Figure 1: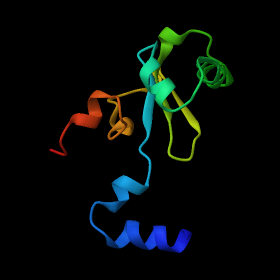
Figure 2 (figure 1 turned 135 degrees about the vertical axis):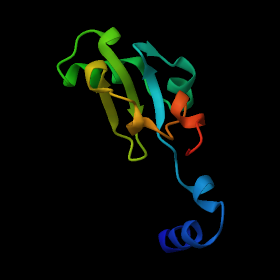
Figure 3 (figure 1 turned 180 degrees about the vertical axis):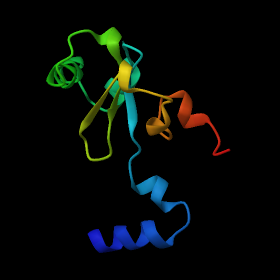
Figure 4 (figure 1 turned 90 degrees about the vertical axis):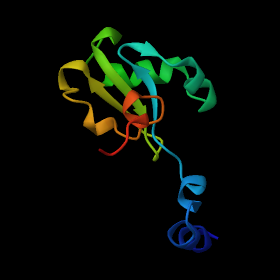
Length: 101
């Protein structure tokens, strides 16, 4: 089954977007995205745990928490956000709707 899915996503135009998941912003600029938390069955507690594991205690100092396609949570502190190019294509961010110009 895995071989069929891998072949289909590689060979059939548009199939990759249907088969594979997309990274999702669960928190942006210190604010939790309740809709995405519910849609992805992630609890607020899980996001807070990921933030604490980075040594941060203040959500307002966090630029983004992203649910990655491998189900891990990436925490991006505000002072490390830079121009935000690393979150290009992440659903729920401004960068996800920009074109590649």
